[in-house]
Image (cartoon, rainbow, N blue to C red):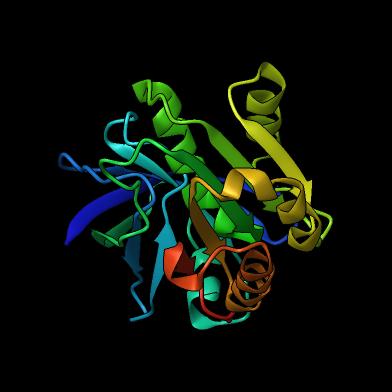
Length: 214
């Protein structure tokens, strides 16, 4: 178990907050992984890391607030509060020994681990081409400034909209790309269906499920 302290909390969009925590001891992780936060009332929730590992000692967590015990406990967190953090865990990490383009597809806060992966790739000089498709069907875009900026500079190809509209536009790229998808289960099912129609087998997709919102 790792000991950490809350150093900042800020709203990103309606119902989504970013919590920054700093660790008391050295902490390392692979981009795309998550940690589990243990609260004093016994609640424990897993949150994907949204920041890159190049930022030592602290991580940013993007969290969709629901009605469950974990969200209630998180609402009570304040700067200076100490928390117990387990991890890192998870296999939603970059494919090794694969130089193909990577197509990231995120829905809602599923964009959090994708942000970590993309920021890491840019910071480390990873030569692979990057495409990010963000399903913004809710009308709110998490980390919009980051991705729009990278897209405008040409560092990545960035699109936002409904996954059903975006995937056909990049169909040619999908034939020789590594595909990574993250989000809540209903979004994942939509993404799998449209990718299958585009010729991408489910077995070829690396996915990170956020389950159902509680």
